[in-house]
Image (tube, rainbow, N blue to C red; front, side):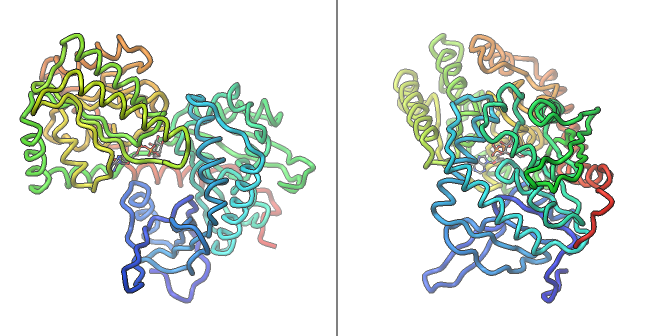
Length: 486
Ligand code: ADQ
């Protein structure tokens, strides 16, 4: 338990968002509800026996609310102004780093004012971390929004152990080198003792960038770098390790949920409402250009035009979660997707038989689990994705052994789920063939594939991920000898 008097903690998580959502009732009463998600579940288990704090933005612009306790956890909000949100979050994080780190599927935008905001907000996070971290604490920093925080914390607090985990890909140096602030970002990351990535290739890309951009010495998975004269790392030598620690899901929790009578009943209800088709194809993605929605719809449109699939026997349900709607590239994508869905339905739907069911909405965990159970073929076809948890959720929710997963080679999940129907989403002919194979393959073959993938996710669940990360952090190269709190 967090004692209300304690102000420092031996375990600190920093992520862009706090794991809670605020709601304000008409009489002004404020309530916080835990946002469901794998990260929260993973952290809950590692925080259980520790004095732990979570530093993050509370989800609305303006001054940060005062720190408060949520069960065992101290929540320490960081305030972001409307301008910070535009420049640091929507700008530098989601319109510079996100496209650059996802193979420049859309061109990244480089603005010096966004970079200044990114630095300013990262400073704010670093200050908050230092405020709550006890002497010798373990600090776990998450994701691309906070890449400068590791060095900013180390400058102030050489006594703490710092880990950073990247939820998205790390690009090849040939792309990363575009970033006007590439050296500053690498120096920021090298404040960490251990850097975790989704795939071995991401870790390798990072190490190659350190060598090429900073002239650092890289041996195996360890990078050594003598801090530069600009004072950011105080000129002290840095040693950090970078390796793959693929994230996963709360497999047991999802399995239990998917097996509950309520979810099973809801799955039957959904299938009925779709007109009991023989084959339900399903896609579930944030409406993001990395997720390959345009390519997927192209393949589906052509399969309908070829007469290979047709409603009511085969129907496609696409859940496209609203996302980053203030960023131009996302608004354009939405228009394109909705235009394409409209055209496909205009051409191939009949009264009562819809070719593509398009749902631009968010759902609760139960509804998602029920949708997964209804899906005979799950289409996970991103052009690039750090991991893709939907793939792991799908194979876990199909505890009945049914279903088939079509999975892009360009996801982190493809490194682990070898029994999926793997595809290159850029190859529309190949994608169409793979979808048809996943529909038509022998029942036993599909069950065998699903069984192997379910076992993989069960044994490498989110708990294993968090344990692996923290073990690697604990064993990371020793801190410099003078690393005591001053
Ligand atoms: P995301 O890009 O958001 O995550 P993903 O891994 O697929 O992608 O996670 C999405 C999550 O949101 C899943 O748990 C899914 O069930 C849920 N979800 C999607 N649509 C929903 C809807 N309409 N309603 C409710 N829930 C919905 C980033 C990286 C990924 C990486 C994760 C975790 O881009 O590559 O796997 O972080 O590290």
